[in-house]
Image (cartoon, rainbow, N blue to C red):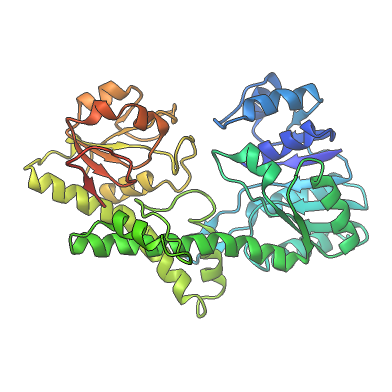
Length: 406
């Protein structure tokens, strides 16, 4: 039996996929309402293919509980936030889950950390906890790190077809766990040491963050000199060795916007490029705010409540708002006492900010400027409804003339 700890955006799909593949699975989370909902067949968030996967897992006998189980394999998929002041990882959730596992597990159990962690986290925080409890690592407890590699909006597909990395102290144990993941993962699975597994995941997201920062800096340069950044990127990308990403209103989610800070926090004297990229991407909501100000001045609009943000999630067609650029922008507005901006997102069905609308037409009736923060399919299907608005398009999705860009 596999006990998966943490039933959020990573733990839940992973638990369901293991169950679908024939493994006996118990998903554990401290949230009693979540556990009860999952047991009844209800999901806590939207995701393509997840509902079908959930039903298949229930048919195969997956169970959900608030209690940690006595079993041979534990997968920890709990949050790993960073401390904003120091930019270092906060390991509190990993340590708490680990202690709860050690309270119930038998000797010989494998503990797999799927949560993304900074390089050295296992040596610095995890091993000392296990050893302080009197366990011998490699005999009483087998320790592994198998960082998740999926993205909201395409989780089910990526669980099956993205390659995986398993870090282990013991290659034989690593190969055994590789066999476990192979029950559903059809891509390559690499077995390596734990520190290499830690570093590789953080490096992947840092690479993307740096490339996005380059695109965002280009957008600022082109705006300053009245050039079309999208046309320039399109032409540059015709070169066979150039692949510039698209600029945007900021970087959100729990991976790209967070993981690079782990390296900055741990290696402050060696991460000049990474730090600069983080600063550029974090500056984009403020840049969007400046563009809103420009449009308001040009059209002599003095009431900020006539501005509406379309999109609260951090990416298209999901309800995940973690580190969302829209939320970052609202925070900047709050700092400048700019209250009253309207907000709408078709995927976010719970009210999480002030002046959030649940009906698109009601939202449009109250605004003159619409800022496209996320290019949901819903927006693309309703473009005609916003043709009479002043449009600031931060995602390059508006197809009509007269649009303002980054």
